[in-house]
Image (cartoon, rainbow over all chains, first blue to last red):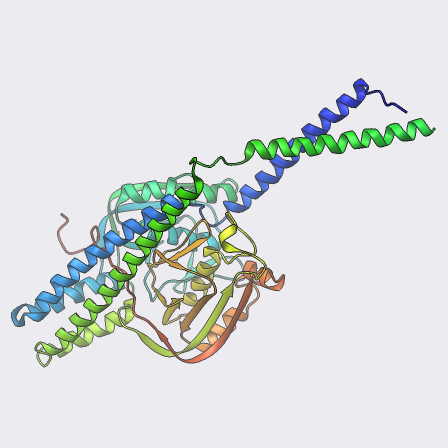
Length: 212
Length: 246
């Protein structure tokens, strides 16, 4: 028996094609939402750039250490060299007040604990030399955000309350660009936290107190 | 009646065919087009370049470790008697910032991808792969439990350590680390154990581990050794507050 294609059949097949189109688009949009939640999807060129910059910084560190070794080998300069190193290490350890240019990232809403960890990570990855959250310096002895049973975030035994201020000392242009890039931390937070009020403000001078 | 049944089946076939065609057409249009006419050549160049940078990085980090050891030895040799107090202070701060290796009791945590998942062939986020965010969450948890020293696959983790991902590659201190991820933590074993056993502490990780999507385990250890930090401490912008600004 020969079947004759009718106008209604054509409508059905076009509707089917449209439905298939929408199903794939929807599936892809769900997949994209999952991908932007926590980690950025940098590509191989960014990976090469990260490694290149890291190696340049390591080479600079070697130059500094070679100078330091030269001073340490000289009886007259040795004491000064040790005092210089103590001063530098005290800055890293958070044992002295510090200042410098940088950025202030402000979040006015409540934020889940994971975002504190991720913002801090992005700041270090963008070249921050010192970071504080609501005036608490992040060092080896203070690091670690704790989410309390009632959802509050605690850092170094202090409960943090909104607005949250993340201060970072470093290259303000590089840090501002890194945070604000496509699929960067700000876009990821905006995509995951409805109505979030988040802003980055470059500053010529940021001051941080030593860890108490 | 027989003709109506036949029509119904044919129309259903049309619907399925239409949906299938629609999906195929959409998938085709949304597929990424290789940037190069020679994708394999381009891939090989990229991989060679990455390997070259990684090899250079290993050499540079090794040199930094040797220089720090030489400086340490020199400082102890040169006028150690008159500088004893300074050297003690320096050693204590170095311990605090990760410039001394640390020994002690603690806990080891192991995270691994699902045996049914291939990291190299997956793109983007995947529930069956350990993500950089998982490592960050674990590190954050152990630091909040007052860990004294932490490392991931022998990379010393300090407060300023970035743990990031580039595609499915995970970078710790901007150095490639591959699964399985062994996180060593020196600190109060009981407190660390208590925090890691809290089902609300790492909910996503716990959920995926229970669903056998990734492998996650931890156990107490004695005499752990956590290596010295081998990276740099750039201080180009930060100054002690009492110093004049440049």
